[in-house]
Length: 511
Image 1: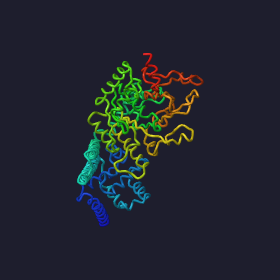
Image 2: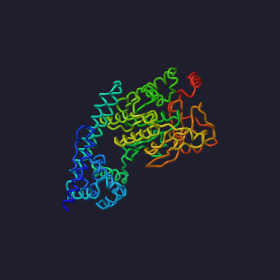
Image 3: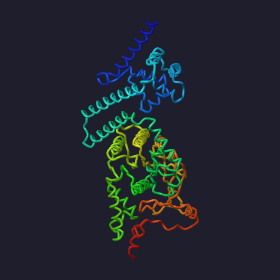
Image 4: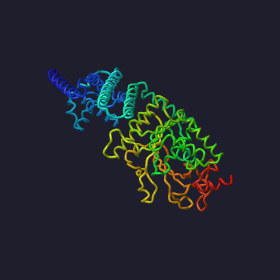
């Protein structure tokens, strides 16, 4: 019996050494690891799988944290058993691996028996957990820095390209630090915070500190405000080209800036200066085309709005108008959170202009990768992201309202999104009056096609193109529109530029 045990142990040692030799070649020498700590941790999982696996998840331990390939496979099997609520013992583990045809690859029953007897109690489970985590982080740090060194030796780009690489590297370092500090925010802490929020809601004292308005009263009433505590992280605002999505994203941003919220904007097709100009025009109800012809009183009104917008810059509003890869964009969001605090809202205009650093052959796969990177970033930082996306026009040919599947390169985008809002301009308004591209005020439906934690449906609003702004339509007004002539367009600043220069100059003569 002893001879057989020694033979099994020798075989396991040779197998693990062979695995080490494969990994050693990556860095030229053996990376930091502890086979004993890994086996002890797996032994703890077989003794008290439910409790120890919960601790693994709290510390973000994944299969990749294990250095020995066989141990990774075993941990993956234990995770499967945990998700299925199966008993996490030696027999069930062996059957699971056997069913997956992986039992022989990990060393068979002999190796499973060895790890099951590695430790008699789970008293030191936390020590082995942290040991496996720390060594994994150390190996990844070596690999990341080795990669950075190699890229630096072969680097031929510009200073801007180098800055982007350094930003991505700094972002990785930040995530590595968060990984190592995960023990400070345990599963119990997160559960306690969630419990407190739920109890406050139950008592009618819901935490609204992170709520964000949509800028439209009727939208908020119908579909609820954006709430990061309700996990409104990745919110997609879709519309066809020139469909008013940039205008609406600016309106959402301004409505929240006026409430003292902080906003970080990434503009991929507009400059900072132009965005500032359009924001002020929207606030003052001015047509940006005729800024050089404004009467004196409207000039003063516009200048006041412009100074209000300019006063936000660098204090509660940060705008980046540089076209960068999604990895750099994510790094800048995380860097902003470290330097200035977590922004209440991040706007990306728009995601179809983003690329990944490693270009992919299929654009749909790349867009899926971009969507996942944005979603994970917003979740990590715990902020609300408003991401603009383009719609294809297949719904126009079919004569229907758009839906999520009409998002260009949809796939992973609609899957990753927490909320999907689509802007739709029908051929006719509720009165049956035809709408065309040349009229200033149009009836637009906002379609909440996905809302993970709230209602869906659609609601109508007015959109005035000349001032790039949406306006509420009350329920009573909406019901009364049918069969009536067009009402006076709502205006935040009467006397401002309308749809045409001629109309403005005609009004100007009477001033």
